[in-house]
Length: 168
Image (cartoon, rainbow, N blue to C red; front, side, top):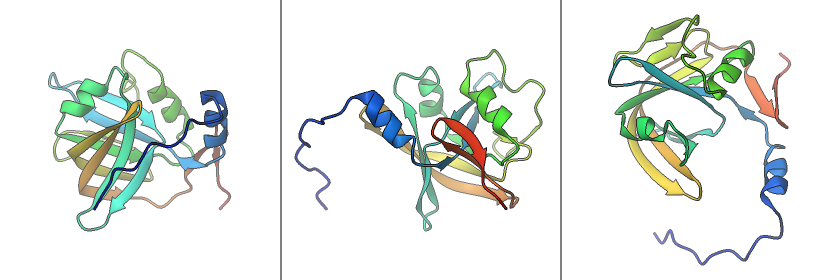
């Protein structure tokens, strides 16, 4: 299969306009977590999460190539994608900021490989860090799901720069 195409013509919009247009797409909210070599944890909020394949079970998410956590997530063998529920907007905000230890005062369990799973998440996916693809100013991470669980509940949604929920 040919995956290369000619370049698109120059766009007639700037990044602000593009970002505003993208904000019209409602997404779920995740916190990606992992364990560092020294035993501490790292986590970040991401709305760029999607399924890729059922067999094998693959999911993807993306991270800005300039992110300070890029070397950590690129180098670790495993991570957990925690899908946040409607009541977890504060967790999304906590992990979207640079703080000394965002894991202070929150409840979590450890996966079988020692990755933090956030209590109250509506779903979680423990992934083997299968592959990474640089595209534009981001890197697309493809994770092979080794374990997952869910607790059906209303989702946390991000739309037009704000968190919201869906009616029951």
